[in-house]
Amino acid sequence: MDIIIRENYEQMSQYAAEIIAGYVKSKPDCVLGLATGATPIGTYKELIRMHREGLDFSQVRTFNLDEYLGVGIDLDKPYNMDQSYARFMHEELFKHINIKKENIHIPDGQTKDPKKFCMWYEEEIKKAGGIDLQLLGLGGDGHWGFNEPGSSLGSRTRVQALTEQTLDDNYVAFYKKANVDRSQMPHFAITMGIGTILDAKNILMIVNGSKKADTVSKCLEGPITSQITASAIQLHSGDISVVLDEAAASKLIRYDHYRHVEKMKSQYGL
Image (tube, rainbow, N blue to C red; front, side, top):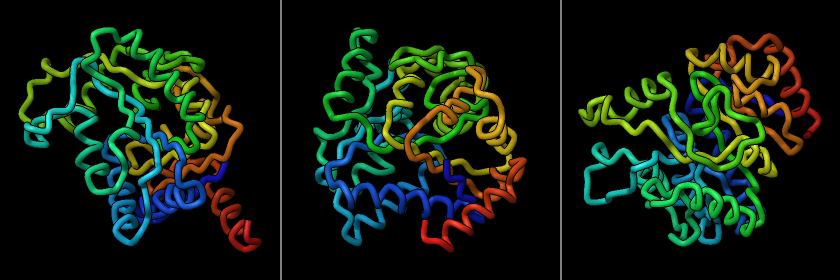
C-alpha cells in the first residue's frame, strides 16, 4: 500500500488524476470504478483539463459505486435541483470528456426490481473483465460507497439502508443547497458491496480534510472491522494508492514513516 501525502486538496487531486490518466494511457479501454461526493470533484476537474490537452476517454468504460434508490437523472432540472449521482457524474465529468454514453454504467435508482438489477450490475462488471482501477473516497464514519457500518466485508451490489450520519452528511453536501426538506431525502441506496470493490484489480483512495483524520487513521492503521468498512483496504492484494492531504493525514501514527518511504521510492525510481 502506497500512502502519498500532499500539502493540500489541489495537490492531492492533481496526483490522483495523474494516476488515473496513467491507466487510461497504458490501457485505452480500461475499466474505471468511479465515486461521487465532494472529494473527487478536484480530481475530475484535473481529468477534464487533461482531456482538453489530449487525454482520450473514447474507449474507457466506467462503473459507478452507487445511486440513491428512487432517484434518477433528470437533465431538464437545474443541477442543484437534481440530486441524483447520475446527474453529478454528468455535470462534473462525463459531459466534459469524450466518453461514449454506452460505456457509462451507473446503478439505476429507478429500477422496478432492485434485486434483479443488482445481480445484473455484478454480471456487467464481470463481462467488462473486472474493474482495473477503483476510485474511492471515505465517508465520515469510514464507509465506502453506501456500505454503512456493519456491512459484510464480503457483500455484493445490493440495496442498503442509510445511517443517520450519512443522511446528515449528504443533506449538508447536496440537499440543503436545493432547499429540499431532510425528510424528503432517499433513505435507501443501491451500492457496490465491499466484496465487489475488493474484486477491483487496483484501488485509489483519496481523502482530504481534518474532519476525516481520525477515520483515516482507523481505516489504514486500525483493525479490520465491518464497523469501518473501508478498513477492508488492508485485505486488498493489488496495487493500492492512498492519496491524502496534510490535514487528513495528520492523525496517522506512522506519518513520518510514510513520508520516508515515499522519499526513498522517489530516490530509487520505484
